[in-house]
Figure 1 (cartoon, rainbow, N blue to C red):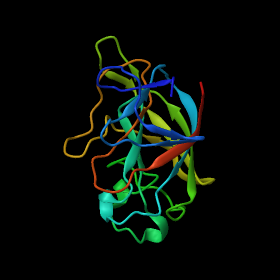
Figure 2: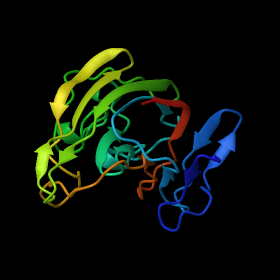
Figure 3: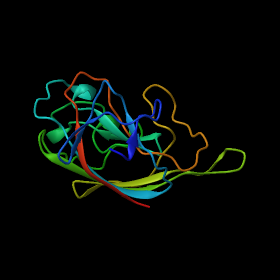
Length: 190
């Protein structure tokens, strides 16, 4: 946890550690890396708890924010039994790009994302020079293939870019009522 902080005030991250497992603390909010990154390869494993009872976007919701702005969705979508909008299911670039397939494992089993991310580039005036791109392997299956990210992902507004440089990776403490998601084996290669 010494590499993670709260984005609110840069204080120490307050998520729960049990052995090699990091579990979301919803009351403490999101966490982000202390270090800033441009383009990178990220390996991260996540698990939905077996005690999950909610539905849709309230079923084990979390997210991995590349450059702190572009969300890769984490959600229980095993066997398409949890109905939600397609660009909000696990493996999606949230509200932008639907995954090619759904290889999610059931609650209680570890899912794996291997993410190759190319950061956006900006002109001196702040305009976009080249968009961010992402390739994602989800449990070893290609679900996003060099997809262009359209801008900072959000729920209710158009996705647009705002100029930035190297930035943190952020993990989301989603405000839904479901039991919290866990992460492990997080590594990055620049």
